[in-house]
Length: 159
Image (cartoon, rainbow, N blue to C red):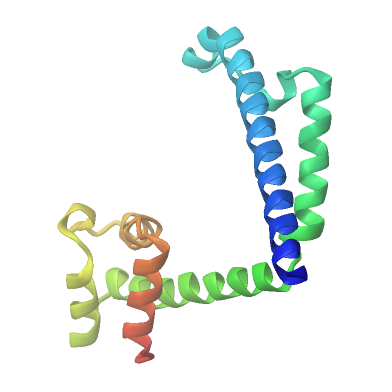
């Protein structure tokens, strides 16, 4: 019975937290929207050079600053977050290490096959090395996380 009571209490606590989070997000979105609407013309004309967050009322900015501190302390420095960040770095670095040399100067059949994996929308047949690198980076940055991980695993012969 005690275990059931603890689960209900935990559920209620999680529900309250979700509710408070939803209210906070809603209020912050409204505050940012107000700033956007006040600066819409200058934004559309490309003259607005300040972050929208800088235009919100001090109370909202204070909440955002607290969220930033809490996020840095509790979320981004948590070991599981660091593991994901490091793994992502490995995947992106690995894909770039494979595709960039292949698009710059496809020397062998392996490189030519890598280039064939790049969709036609990213293909470039000119001689500009910068544009060739851009092909590889555009292809990789356009990937979903799951697709990038799966392709990386296949190319590295893992799983």
